Image 1 (cartoon, helix red, strand yellow):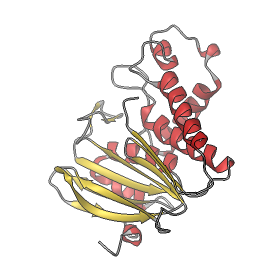
Image 2 (tube, helix red, strand yellow):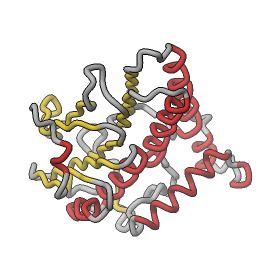
Image 3 (cartoon, helix red, strand yellow):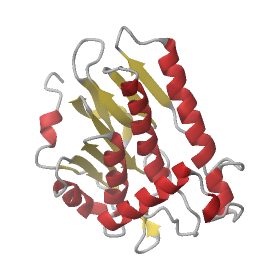
Image 4 (spheres, rainbow, N blue to C red):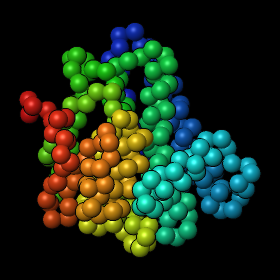
Length: 242
């Protein structure tokens, strides 16, 4: 789906086969859910070539999760675009990363890091025996890290306009969400972080308050004027050595 993927495993018992499994899985997800591929299932659905009765099991799961997320966010998460097409990317990315992490866990791997398009599942420890180091980029200068954090056994996702441009819409108005430029969410896993980051971004400046009210989540928001706002306990993840 047009996203770079990085996988790092620090368990010494892991084999090259573990990486093969992960990248084969992401290839499967891409072939099924990419809106850029003419032969993907989601493209077939959008073109009216695949009936609901013929949806694959994974497609049915995604539609169910999307409906649940729409309800949980008061309608701010919607996989139906203003053009009427279905684009589940805001859900599929985090979902697929979490599934890939579970593949490694089933193989007994405990220390690893999966980054797909900037959304990350960080488990166990890095090669130095520490929590994984992750940086939040300055949306106005992508070469600059403005916040350094340490994570283990949780997920982080960032929604923003500074790489892909205006691609997140407020479902209520049908217009692009432009009040903020970056919103990073830390959650119990990357799927949860990803879906709520997308919805909170669509909410604009009040999105950070939505994250504040979610139990077990923290957020870091940067608005169009460059002002940063974080949830009350976000700094507990700060890398104290930076």
